[in-house]
Length: 112
Length: 116
Image 1 (spheres, helix red, strand yellow):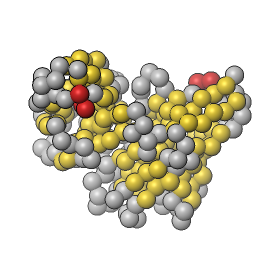
Image 2 (image 1 turned 120 degrees about the vertical axis):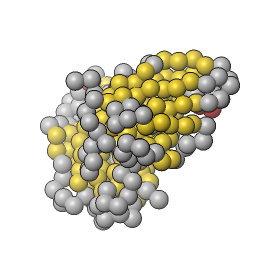
Image 3 (image 1 turned 90 degrees about the vertical axis):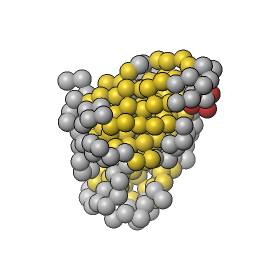
Image 4 (image 1 turned 60 degrees about the horizontal axis):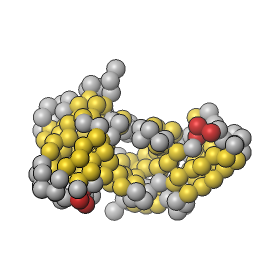
């Protein structure tokens, strides 16, 4: 049982380049999330999708777009990367109700 | 707005001793859940323990227990018989449920060191 799978694990971009972070879960969860983790800041929500076909902004959505491709997949796109987007990105999912989040192993992104 | 505050950026404990990590939260919701996550150097986010706000009894998972004070909006984590493998970042998180989006809001974390 793979759980939540994120690709890639590491990425280096130059300022202005674009890329898409991929996330897939095989637990049939309804909700999916993208967080970024920066030193001393904890995890901050970028975007989330409460169910297939819906997406909503979180605390720090600027500079990002998301797509909930189907129930399994939720991608995060950086259209024009900036050094301020250097961070570790986590995808997570959970079923409905009060269940906790299940996390992927994160993507370390560096923008130079 | 929902907030979670961890006032201890770093903590240290001697192996086999007990340590308590502090967390306070603020929410206007009546239904919510609280969690502690552990993040070792591997970067993996691991659920340690969870507490339903409607339950008065404090949650316990082996060496991990919480002190949930609903009126004070406090949710501390106690680690007993600390082990070297407990060294990690610990994050407190709050999940609103029952009409809200169901987002998990995290504190900034406490880095726990365990001395042999």
